Length: 325
Image 1: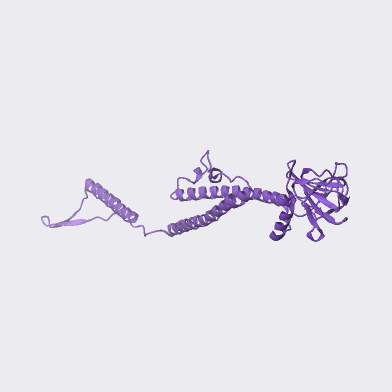
Image 2: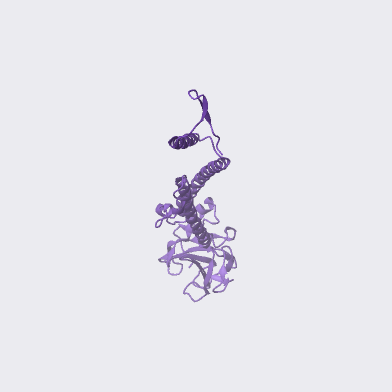
């Protein structure tokens, strides 16, 4: 219940009751409401212009955001390091490994290809740090793809290396008769005097003179293609299919130590020196075939001869003497 107020009337010398006017009461109420609104507005402006005033939850969210930005920065620096290492591997892949194994390098467009089609990062857009998050994810995806491409390339290099190793093991690369068992190089590849007709005839191999029964060695890995005496003039002879277009032939043998279809390795004893077939004395007639053409065996002794030994055998093989078959 509101208090009743009075005032002293000097004319009547008595207290009179104060009667409040209705309009005045409404004015006072509106004035109070306006004052409250202005005060609230001023406080809101002050609050919005004082960012240092934060609630504990806002402070926690701000710290989380700063930590996220820091972690993304660290992640990008790590990706820079990975990218540098990957570029180095790609360079060695194209300019060393593939060059050595005679394989075409991977096109740069294939290595650097991005991701076309739909927007893969739509769910990451619309935030304050969307550009940072989207770009980092793009880099990560592209880097992952590059690593996958390089991994497949190294798998291919591994296969090429195995094939290269197999090729190097298969190529005839040693002398079929050891030096300590040789008497001499009787004849080399080229025009030589035939021991029977005494006329010049092309000699398609090399003749190694050695005592009957001297071991004859496979000059490269391969499979025995023939081991018989059914080829005119060769007598007991062996042919090894080395693959890659190479075949080696060992003729005039006393006997052989292998069978058709058998796999042999470089250095295996496959037979023994003899004088069977069209032969004037015990020796080994040795030939190398490449893609069905007979080629000079002198170029295939790098596997077990020193430079001095090779020079010596080269001089002997170049002499235009008489062959033994």
